[in-house]
Length: 534
Image (cartoon, rainbow, N blue to C red; front, side, top):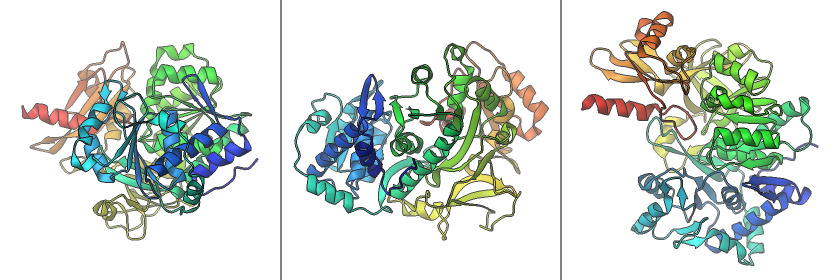
């Protein structure tokens, strides 16, 4: 049966609630919510928000992990035209102050704690400041602060007419979601995704994935694991949103844990998994991997960073027979291109990320904005139904991030082949300038991760009086393994031009990662510079 096309995410939730009411839409910690229950709960929560005065265009901040309360909050806000702003549960008071003040929400829906982070204490502190005093706080865990999320859902709100009016009074081009992005390269930017951006991405990805899986003999319910943070576009749109649109049986995990992910795959017989390269690197390097039955997994999907041939081959031999790579960004479209299951893994390792999805335009330009022919490297520009129109309340970022004719300036370097396929070479903002030479971190990292005793590597530029910048490299060996600085430098000297060879190699048990699993180069750079200045 063909998937229906709707303009709004909430339309799919209500549709499946009527068409297949007993479908097990969400599994979480032993509890299952049917399609009908998800539709009813989100209607109720939407009326709660209406009773608090939330209207179309108002912001609803969530500080929640990947759990049912987040799904309910996102869909409920979507139903009344409010804009969801998911924030990372690891944010402390300084982060929350900055981000909440920027979006000025009517309501904050939050957990009380996340690990060792006392979110409640941060919210208490903020609520005492004049700027935050008028915000309504809904707590999903017991707290003597704000209102109880669960208790409000137990009350009766005779606002059916108001809810139906709110559903009808929406425009697909209006805002649905704000994702803060770009925090590793400067001030975080508030990307404003419209209903079209969100729903179309979910529809296209569902169509892509389902076609592959059905052609590989997967029948019945398609089951997924959603474990990325909702504050990342991959967590909210690609995992949660796609499952809601495609009527996938969604297994929510509050955080990404390799053993819990593997256990879920084995028990639920998950047919595909998605993640960033570092999550796969962790899985492939695990000695426990062989203990799990992953025979149900037909497809592994990667996005978010360049990937080595060794890792791709490791995924194909240890996790799934099919591997697909995607490319996108919060602003351009969470996925703009996909490779084909028949593509050569060696080509993927060289940076090939596939061809654009339907309706998406990709071009390569030089520093003056001139379009370059196939084979010539420049900045990747993107435009289409998945691309945002603007940042939220950041006009200067709009000028810097979009061309006059509506293309998103990705900040990525790449080129197109004659067939219209895209190759990504690296980030403009991650370029290391050693004298008059330019070096991409990926050039060094791809060589170093070939070493059998290297699990992760992160190269960065450190200020140098003579050369402007020199390369420093952080290396993480697999658990129980050892590698020396001399070995790594020797390997680089063998395979790289001399100006690309790291001046220092620091061996670590771990390196800081961004919330979506990429090496946090900015944190590493600050750490090194602070040490050098002591």
